[in-house]
Image (tube, one colour):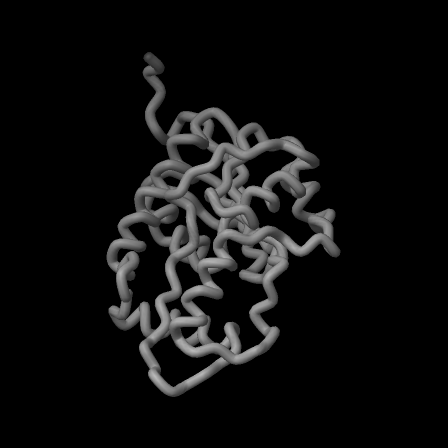
Length: 201
């Protein structure tokens, strides 16, 4: 058993990226009703990346010498981790899956998936969840996910390929655990953030 304090132990860094561009296009028609959008989201969750792209050099360089590769269990995240690391298979954890997008039950309205995404996220943040995970439950899961990253990052660097919204939800619990975001690449496809451990204040 090491007698080093938590602050003295080497941790990280942790690199967290959003997945690449999915094959299923959220801007493509036709317009859908809320039930059809829910089916579309299920297909999106099970879908892969579009093949006409490659991981950006900036991300590949950032994770080139990473010790541990992680992802959510969704194919688009698993493939992102593999593409970014030149073929390494990630350790998959459902705790890193995207926060749900339950559509409001608008009986007569039809929208493109990209519009439903906005409406569903807004409704979810206000408490709407259909039969899925609530915003409170997702925040609890984000805290659990941050703890997983914290533990995994002891004495090694970690790369996580996950999802846009959930990656944002990780920021606060990581900060509480002593991690500082030293590079923020935003939320676009293939974007990433770098966290360094500074210890709990």
